[in-house]
Length: 198
Ligand SMILES: CC(C)(COP(=O)(O)OP(=O)(O)OC[C@H]1O[C@@H](n2cnc3c(N)ncnc32)[C@H](O)[C@@H]1OP(=O)(O)O)[C@@H](O)C(=O)NCCC(=O)NCCS
Image 1 (cartoon, helix red, strand yellow):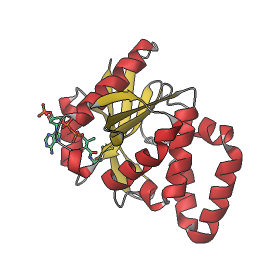
Image 2 (tube, rainbow, N blue to C red; image 1 turned 45 degrees about the horizontal axis):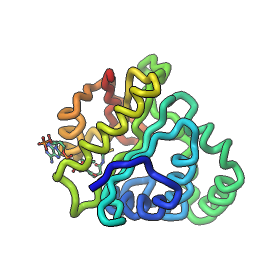
Image 3 (cartoon, rainbow, N blue to C red; image 1 turned 30 degrees about the vertical axis):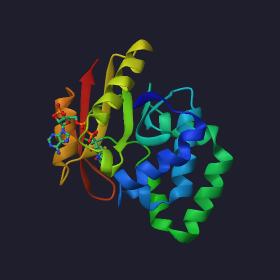
């Protein structure tokens, strides 16, 4: 198995991996066209650090991070405004509530905590269900951290669910992440913000 930087050609398989690893999650409910847009924008972004784990041409897992969390989602949309507009119009007719939730989650932080988002952020890491627990997630995260460190980044953060999420939280703890704060994301989703000094 090889861990390497993802290319645009990997995006359809990354989307399949996402749909498998994140079944029922909000982003997944936006549909595969939205996920295609999202991960293609990520791979093409100057700030994006996207890795995939590949075996015999099959993507078994992926990670997507940005070097600079602050303003990343807004930059992603601005740089792909036409495609985003088309998807947003479609969502407006099919899932209007989802569009509101998307806008409210453009930045995920707590109102009670001062957070200038001065860190890199891991947005997504997923391993296909049949390949989990074999060390692939760990390798993907190490590759991401090492690439970020090479770019001069000294801290990486992420958000993950607080409830019913013991295995992912255990995974991040095993990788040296600790809690920066807890917060409630729209509409009422309790989350951890975890952080690691690289
Ligand atoms: C979380 C996820 C990315 C981890 O990838 P993985 O390949 O399954 O994990 P690994 O095999 O690399 O495990 C690495 C370490 O995490 C810990 N870990 C993983 N799953 C665990 C579990 N269920 N319980 C306790 N610890 C666990 C272990 O300490 C393990 O280290 P070890 O192999 O030395 O024991 C993967 O399981 C996944 O895609 N889950 C669904 C999507 C998700 O929840 N993503 C993250 C939330 S944002």
